[in-house]
Length: 115
Image (cartoon, rainbow, N blue to C red; front, side, top):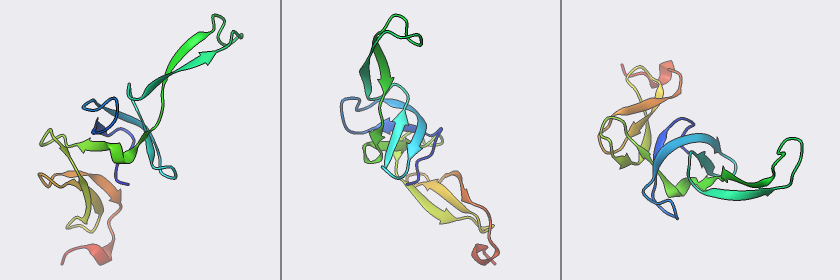
């Protein structure tokens, strides 16, 4: 799973197909992500001190990671992500369309550095 919190993604399947938004949270165990303004549902809330009026509360629900695609900032298009080692030996994510780096996954290690 190469998608992280804060990434810009595009929804490729489901009711919100074509929506571009930002990832709020990623649940790696379930393989789901919470995305801003995507997969919104109504939760019916009873009157209480916390919600004095009660009624319907609109909130986002997690979406399957297989239904989202990373939007590369350099080529501005949805693309798949890959992992590779940089010349310094750090593991990084990269866009498979344009080859641009999308951030570091692991710190540099001498055994992976190019000589």
